[in-house]
Length: 157
Image (cartoon, rainbow, N blue to C red):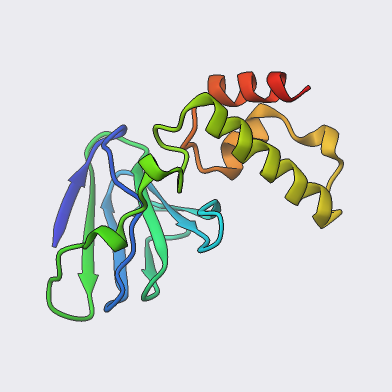
């Protein structure tokens, strides 16, 4: 299947429980984002482009993911290893229930940020002073606006 996507096009975080998915970037640039099963936080963001170091990627069965176009006119080829199956409700993260930051209320962003900072502190992998709004924005895959993150960080101080 060929898909043309534009920057800002809404694509829910979703998974395919019965098929892996191969994505090939034919035109433009995009980012495939992967999310974990526990907190649905972005764990990896891989840029694809026809002339870049990564042109194609395979998304394993059951992996939560989404795609974001970085350039206008981006076109991708999507291949699944089975017949087409529409996504069920259980295959799309329900942001209204607070499972992802898209559309969250400010208090939800603050709660998620508090948990994120606690997890970073437990990992002992970085100085907590290095947790800037920009760092959180990148780690969350751009799913929460920088302004919301800045406000939540200020509220936590």
